[in-house]
Image (tube, rainbow, N blue to C red):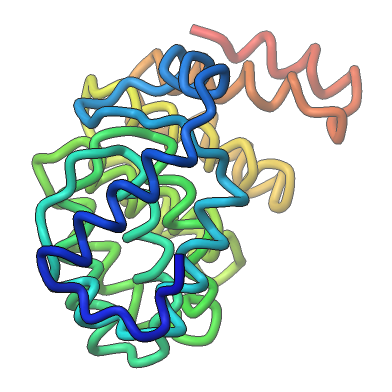
Length: 236
C-alpha cells in the first residue's frame, strides 16, 4: 500500500484496515494472543513488518493519520505508537504521546513504544517531567510507560536516587508495574551494584518486587555465583 499521498479520510482508513487484515499470519496470531493480554483484536502481523508500515506512514501525511479514526486492532495501536515515536518536534510528540499512552492496555505495545523513543536520549530533562506525570497516573500501563522509559534511558548516576525515591513511593499491587520495577532495579544493580545493593537492603518495596528483583538478578549471566548466593539470603 502506498502511504505517501494518502489523505487519511474515512475511505482511506478503511483501505488501510483492509490492508492490515490482508497481512494476517494466523500462526503468529495464535502465538501472540497467548502471550499478550489485550482488549484489542489481534490480527497477527509480525513486528518488523509493522515497523516498516510505520516508517512508510511517517514519510507521508503522518499528522493527518494521527488525527484519523478509532482503532479496533492491536496492530493499529502498535503502528500508531511507532509513528509517534518518530516525530522530531518535541511539543507535537509530547502532545501525541500523552494521548497515546491512554490507549495502551498491554506490555508489548508499552515496551515497544518506549524502546522506540530514541529522542529521549537528547532531551532527558524534558521527558523526565513527563515520566513523573505518568507515574502519578491511576492507569497501570501509563505508569508502566514511565518506568520503562526510566529503564531504557535513565539508568545513570545522576538519576539513581530519584529513581529509588519513585519506587519507594509506588505502592501498588499491579502486576505489570511491579514487574517493570523489578526489571529496572535488576539493570540498576548490574550497572551500579554497590549503590543499588544498599537500596535493596533498605527500601519500601513490597515483598513481590523484592523477591522478583532478586530472581531477575540471579538469572543474569553477568552476575557471579558468589553474588547470586549472597542475594538469595536477601529474599523475603
